[in-house]
Image (tube, rainbow, N blue to C red):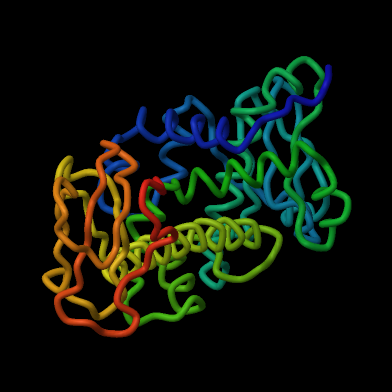
Length: 302
């Protein structure tokens, strides 16, 4: 079977369905930690904690078919095979130690849930399992399209885009980018170090934060430009843009009127909306007095 392809928007939609099915407030409410282990069990998946390898090189494993799984048993000591049912996620027990990273445990769970959601049809019936490796195996695993997909969906499950944006706006004041990312990682209980289980989450943070910052800057520049640029409108239709007054000038400095007689005007322009000729007089001259692209009679401009 061909490797399935998922756009990022599709993965966002899958995460939204999974989270809102469990609790809509986790997606639409106040930013908080996503209870990923509870969500896994709500999907009907069995979650078990075992020592998967003595070296700790395997952090998690998703079982798609009934069969056996290899674990390390310290009581023997040695490797043994245990019976597992399809629909089981095995998490390495070393991630549950007190000195272990909570973020790494949570991301491993989210990564394995992503395998189940995305790749069940691909693996079912093959007897194979999907395993998440440590950073010592990053070259082999991260080059896999399936692992890349599981990493991305896993990060989205832990940090839904709407929640990240809300959290960003709540915390942005008085924090630099590094502090902001660290504090947000603390709220979502996600990895804060660029390790194999966390670097994609940080990239996701940076992408969303950059988008939010860019939009805020665009809105700020737009407001400043609107403040700086003062538009002189047609006095007849009140819609056509006749000229732009310079920054610092008062609109009361200019008088606009319809050219229906021989009244003198400093500037004559044609309204681009109604087509009527408009005269402009400058009551108190300053330099520059007005900004117009064309100042000749019977010439329309936008």
